[in-house]
Length: 267
Image (cartoon, rainbow, N blue to C red; front, side, top):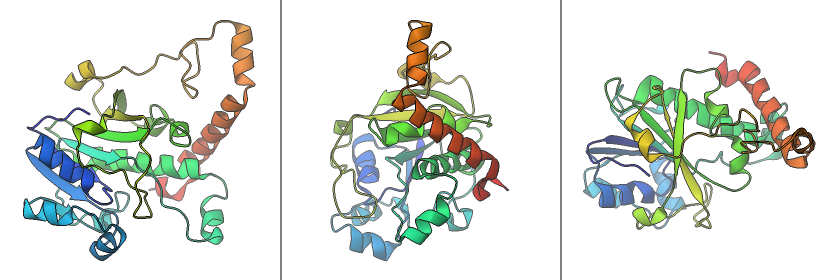
């Protein structure tokens, strides 16, 4: 992960606040503001080992009840304060009952709901949180395993926008000693797996690109499935008929429906 000590950083949805605490301890950004979706009471009850006290003792602003998709919860943040906004291992919380699930997923899937969350994150970063004269970077760290790898973070999230995916870098958790990747709903640690930090900007050229793995060129391949080049027409035909590709095609179809019809994109 690329962190400049001169940057003003906002962290989104940092469950037990261990990432924000590690970021402050080991990288000392110019300014740090940490946000949590849970209320203060729920945070303290859910995560017995949390870093709220540490951050507040270090005069770090911590905002609870903060929903990145709902501007009514953004009290405490002024327009355009930050250079970088970070969302670590995002995941839509589990449904409490079957009725809620079927209501949300009549035309789409949980895959689509996670894409919707991340698209709103990106749109709100560049519309509200990032300084027009600052670095203007948004970062999503996610796992390189299913179902996360099926979200098509590199290309799907910025469709029909003026935002750009700049590239990615491996996420090295050893740079953030003390950070514990948590279960989104419970006081449990999540098994560590390979993760990538994906960087976005509303500029198509940025100095950070020299430190990133460039986006894939899939002009003769399949970006959905991370294939850059088909060896032959037979190779292409076989891939398009594969279970892997057909599943990604289904997710893409659901995503196109959401972009056109989901209520959260209709304003």
